Length: 84
Image: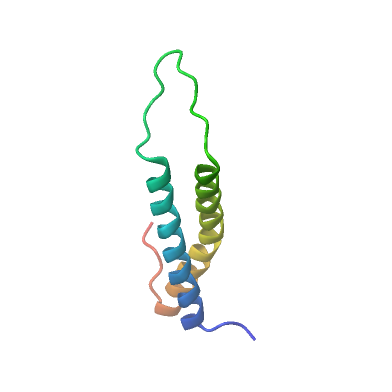
């Protein structure tokens, strides 16, 4: 049995919330990005920074195919295909 549109929408919303939280955490842990000065070594990443980067990457990788499925289903359901 395939999932209903409402179930798909619930998974999509949960994915959006996960990615939003992951990137908020990443911003808090990493701070604002700053360019390296000439000759400056790249900073060493802490475990917390690596973990935040990994979670943001995983959240985004799971979000993209779900986003595409959600919008393809919604456009088909509403008969409202994208203009571009």
